[in-house]
Length: 349
Image 1 (cartoon, one colour):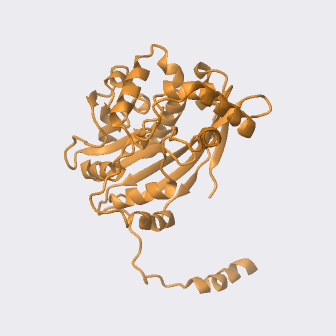
Image 2 (cartoon, rainbow, N blue to C red):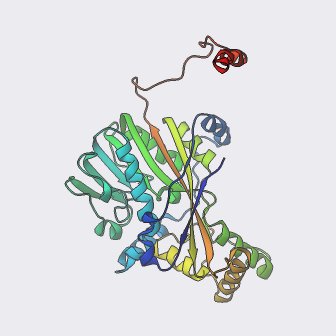
Image 3 (cartoon, rainbow, N blue to C red):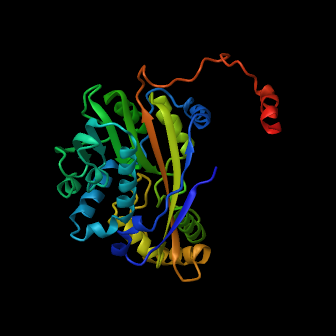
């Protein structure tokens, strides 16, 4: 598997708002075989078991704090880019959706790019009242804003045509439950389109903090929240009942002046750590030492340090009789071992 790796030079957060003009897009699509391989990773999970990794109330506080910053939009360069790309995928689907829901909308990173040719009505949802107060709706589309916890969706069965979620579901504890609720709320042949941070996100920062704390304190705490792996995401969507799955993997690499600038921007994005096992305080000397390790391990010739954001984009459909289905096993009339002989006449001509 290869993933696209795109480098963005960081000058200031305000300048990075225009990153979509310089980022090229290359993706690898993963479907079929990935889905089948990934299912076994979840078979051993006890029925009814729910992970409890993240402090959801703390994350809502982080969001409200970020939303209260009058200059907070300067930190939206990453989420604005992801939302723009996700909205573009909506237009690739040649259909007009009656009811669209944007989960974890933030400042309307996806919804603001939609129009009345794509959706008839939009519901923008977030756990943060602060973000909803600053949420940008699309033009000419009736829009409703709701405070909604992604783990407890209020939508009736078979009532939504499309769910959209951009870089928000990585803070959900019960991701299998959320996926199942989304699948249940979708109408038959409805679509779930989203993106989440993947497992390689911020691996440089995570490694620098772990190396520094291990050397200084003999162990390390959780300073960077865990992220989902591609095979896990495919398996969860499949288990929730989605069909015709497609996963794309992208890497955006942003160069920051120092690790301190990176951590400041993460806080401005409301992406600071919210795991239950996080340390309540990171000492200043530890931060300085970790920044030095970061620079030594990953620093570039121009003095900047790179930060990788691994983004997994996906699309899944609720089953419907009209959807294409794989042919029954044994229905083929040509064997793979005969393919070579079938192509020989074509080569001679």
